[in-house]
Length: 298
Image 1 (cartoon, helix red, strand yellow):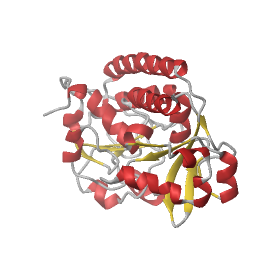
Image 2 (image 1 turned 180 degrees about the horizontal axis):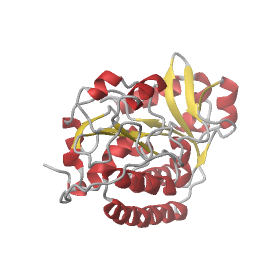
Image 3 (image 1 turned 30 degrees about the horizontal axis):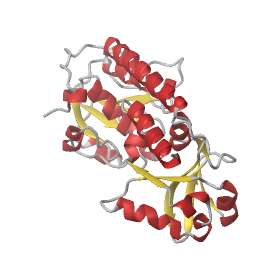
């Protein structure tokens, strides 16, 4: 049974030109060399947000496989899994005989992507980004690749209004709390998010402040850096059934225990793809994170 959120009638498959293949310059043909310009009926989606968008467009019947990060809606999990987005195997992807691969920017490794490009299968490069506008770009890119640009524009309009509403709510509830997103906490090491990341983007949209913004990407923090960051709240992804207990264990770190977050045992745990996917559910993620931050401050 399909999720109510994504339940829409599938449209007649239309012939279309696909979006630019990965790493192909805009001035070159839209299709990778050797790719025919026909409507795709066997599609592999790589990237959780990409898969969610396909479902939101009502085009899920054309999917034959997805990557490991594509775990929503529940129906997506019933599709064959071709591997993790950053560790794709050409053999795994090609085993389902696709005629189109929707590949989120940043998929890899590069060697696998190069092999797939030479296979003759169409590859649509879906742009990644961590702003409201970037979400709409993803929707339009997927819609163009599937040959349903009108449906994509309708979805983009709906999401744009929803995101604007969520952003305004977050602004009205702005807590200005300093949030430290912890990607990993193992062996006494804290791997945290700087700027130019999905974590930084969602923290900003939720009306809070990233506690570390002096570097780009993810980085292991020294004790001094943790103390200097002085986070009010730690934000983490849900991992396993006992995630709440595991999350509290992050404060066993001596430096983090001395911060305002550690002293007050303030930690928020949310589903990784829901929180960081920057797809159709991001407006809800903004609202949820903003509310939890507000509740912690009150």
